[in-house]
Length: 110
Image (cartoon, rainbow, N blue to C red; front, top):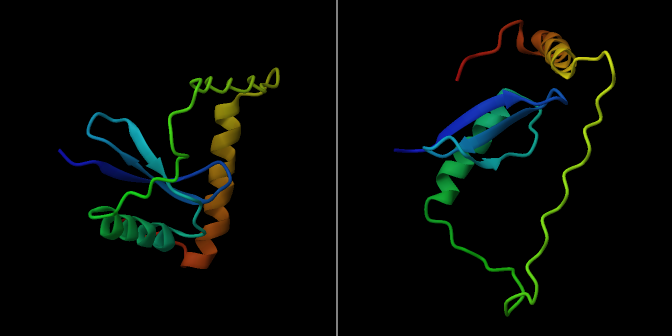
């Protein structure tokens, strides 16, 4: 079974895509794109270049002496009385409103 590319709008109102494996694990997340056609072009480029891409080993020679400790996750920066999901949704709504006039009021479906 093949992986799946998912287009989405991030919290900064930029278009991104992620590649999910057959088991649902996120394998890669793209950089930010200014519009949907640019993100689709990024997916096309990944499809074209990754199939037979060579591996460049940029790791230092030899094994590290001590395994690296996992980085601690940053503490949650929640604000009492503010639901993060509502804030994120509000950003997406405002981003759509800003993009609509530039696209003639309609965004095509890929």
